[in-house]
Amino acid sequence: MVAPKTITIIGGGLAGLTLGIGLRQRGVPVTIHEAGSYPRHRVCGEFISGRGQATLTRLGLQDLFATAGAISAHTTAFFSATKSTAPRPLPAAAICLSRFTLDAALVEKFLSIGGEMQTGQRSPLENFDEGSVRATGRRAAVEPGGSRWFGLKIHARNVTLAADLEMHVSPQGYVGLCKINGGEVNVCGLFRKRAGDFGSAKNWRAFLGGLPNSPLQQRLAAAGFDESSLCAVAGLSLQPQQAAARSEISVGDAITMIPPVTGNGMSMAFESAELAIAPLAEWSRAEMTWSEARKKIAHDCDVTFAKRLAWAKWLQRLVLTPSLQNPLVTLTARSDWFRRMAFERTR
Ligand SMILES: Cc1cc2nc3c(=O)[nH]c(=O)nc-3n(C[C@H](O)[C@H](O)[C@H](O)COP(=O)(O)OP(=O)(O)OC[C@H]3O[C@@H](n4cnc5c(N)ncnc54)[C@H](O)[C@@H]3O)c2cc1C
Image (tube, rainbow, N blue to C red; front, side, top):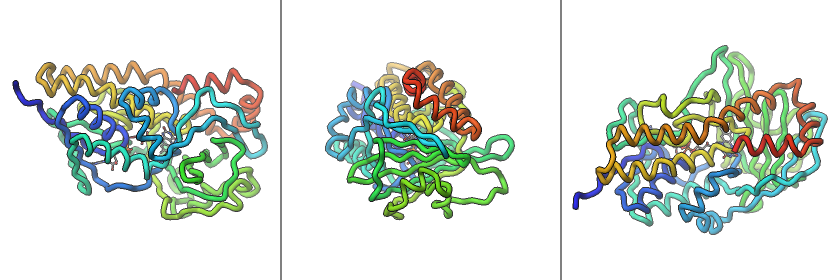
């Protein structure tokens, strides 16, 4: 019998690690190259919802989440400068776990089933040879007109929330407050910054702390922030891209980034990794060519994510248009149908 060929994954975030685990479960030799190290904090709302949860079940990873201390989220509430909703049930429960803990737990799992990993070195991204998969996360971009999105995250204690997940919108962007493991609250936001605007990640309190007298500022008034968990990302592109347009096999944000306001990026990372497992295992056993595997994975990802990305783009525009924020929170408070529809269509 011919020995299976090795898959090299560039990027050890959620998509790369999930793919690595899935391939190892099928006996494929895998090496992951990760630029950073573990554990480390990531800019993320740390709220996992949607179909990716079924992927975790199929890959047998639920126990890993439970052991790592993940908690369930069942309720949500929305706030603008002057309007708010009462806590409402989420259409489906979500899982909340710090990325500091989650990414490290996935690495441990990957290594325990024979995966190989090299950390602390950035791989070149110019050429992806046959056998190499791109899982490098978001591709930095500046949008036309010079506006830039940037994200910030910090963990806090002494924060009492009205719901498991609170979403606060303001003319600056949005901030989500989400209960996570260890009694902490994830404070994570996405903000628009136009070229020349004042404001930077160093000034995080001005963004994550909320505008003067806002519900967000009141909510965080007594918070104790863990500044070692503070992290930032900039240059986010929120224009949906197609996997078929990529020249290499990509998974996760390396295909495209769904607007973070939907809380579905991690789910898409798990799902895209799962879609890639079977074709890559077939390539490893010389039952499929690399080109066939690339086409199949790209096609399946595009079919799976196209509607979600389109709805998310629309929702993101609504949420981040300042004049619509108060009416939107009022609609969310009054209409179960609207809340459920927005949740389900973006997952
Ligand atoms: C503000 C904000 C809030 C969010 N909130 C949520 C949320 O609540 N729920 C949700 O589901 N999603 C959320 N997301 C999205 C989610 O974080 C991402 O979709 C998810 O992390 C994508 O996983 P990934 O593996 O594709 O990329 P990443 O997790 O970014 O991993 C990519 C990895 O590749 C490595 N890498 C990059 N380049 C190289 C290189 N050249 N060589 C080697 N390694 C390399 C990086 O170091 C990194 O570890 C949020 C995103 C933002 C910006």
